[in-house]
Length: 231
Image (cartoon, rainbow, N blue to C red; front, top):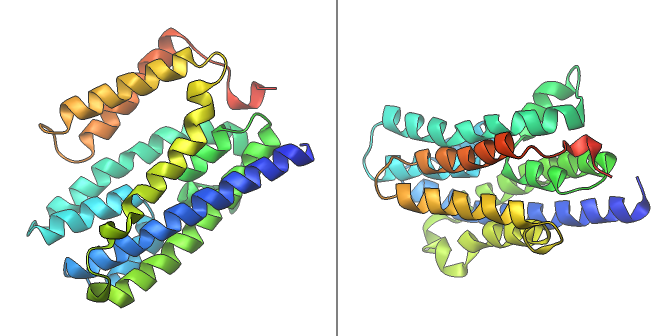
């Protein structure tokens, strides 16, 4: 791994961790407003550790839904993390105690940074630094948002709900605009179309899972080289 590849992976890891962590303020504040205690809010961030699932959970609870409905909705949306396993498992080759740790840290952000690196070693570095960085920042800012609670008002007015999305866009933009990006644009466009079409008619989580199916179908028709084979 070259110094440039290492610096690029670390730079992306820090940027994504900070952006995602700031978004944790929004979750913490909205969670206590929805009726959860600070301890319950922190348990979600420490154990569930999946932003989309956590927001889905408190959304159902806050609207008066049952605990069973909240768990089912959060679980359905969180199922997308299972799709990342085939991508990161060959790259990390984690064994022993590192394997369950890697499973806990396999989220949108760590997978995105890891698979964005051309060098496998840089990909591993990006995965671990992003996963750990997001975990620490997300939980710290969740606690801050939960403690401040109503004092923040609606945290979305600060634009924190857009921070994570902006970081992701910056991360994937080279793949959408660089040489040979036609296939990536096709997958992204198809996934967006599917998600937008299904969102008004399906439960939370379903549009995300079916949008991911677009990439699976395209990958089956036009297979690409795995991460570890890139140069």
